[in-house]
Length: 329
Image 1 (cartoon, rainbow, N blue to C red):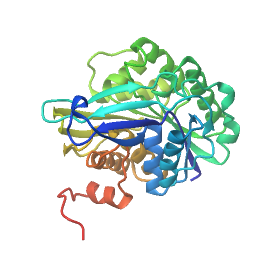
Image 2 (tube, rainbow, N blue to C red):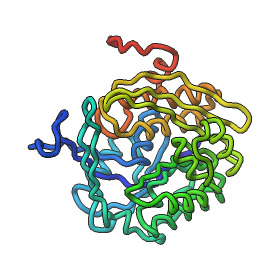
Image 3 (cartoon, rainbow, N blue to C red):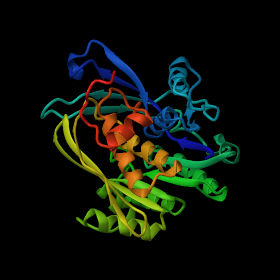
């Protein structure tokens, strides 16, 4: 299996300590993350050859983000330097019936101001077998939408497998703009994941269809190899149940359900995406693919920060039935 390439925006995240609210905060913990960067780090931790592509300013804070990627083994050679700032976001942890709260400060970030000519996709994809991106990246600017389309076209022309996390963010664009852009991008994709609502927006039809119906429509409309939907029920800010379904065009595969006590709400979907890619590229069976992806995302919720730092062995242990949390000695 060749290199896995991801494209997106990495941001500096600042969170009050513990469960403090923003108005109480005297200090902030710093993390670095973004959907595709989180996927890249998790895949590198799994032992995959993975590179991350973005644009970042040539300053010390952006360098910290790059250093964080490198620390876990992500190849950063294709990161373009330029622009004025790295995007920021602030995350207040939820507690009990009080939800987590996010405030974004990402306008005019380096990647949002990037130009199509910043990226040589033929060079970036040299030696690669897989390309992953999310619906967040084309939402950052009109130019980013063109950059993403350039990337999927180039990836497809070079024979890469292309995966998309649908990732609709209503603070970046409206549903109609998302649907139009995502439908064009999905024509070049092989694997898609997201929620039922995101999948229905991508299809452009449906209102309240069940999960299997939506997956079937998604696969048939865009001729996908795999489509998955994550299913969750939230009871409090810290308590959620979590499972997923995979469809391969002929059969549905259901993962076991996990009752999760959440430490940090950010990054569960990205952990799912990384675990899904790992399992597919490691030739797992279809049932093992969805079980590994679901278990990997479950474990992400047990740790602070944006990224799942679980190992392959830890995920396999959970998917095979050991969810006791017993001390490992």
